Amino acid sequence: MDLDANVCYCFHVTRRKLLAFLRVERPRVLSQMSHCNGAGTGCGWCVPFLRQLFQDAGRVNDLDALAPEEYARRRAEYIRAGHGTPPVGTPLPDEETPSA
Image (cartoon, rainbow, N blue to C red; front, side, top):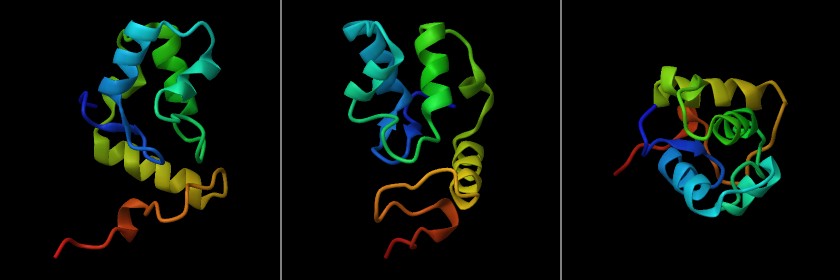
């Protein structure tokens, strides 16, 4: 997954923002990652990935192996399975409306 791909789809927080937050703010506990534009406070899908970023301090982790499309697809499956509720108006990948 590249640096500009969303990790938190609910609040559009990219991997780049999260890594910069870790580097600059140096959160002491995982829950402080939410101070980075609300990451992890929506549907909950990204919390395991936030945990990895927090624990690994940006080193290689599961996000490196995922393409953004695969990540989005897995999040959609997670939500459809009833594991989280994204903010109103946040479409899942196959529900996005085409641009005009």
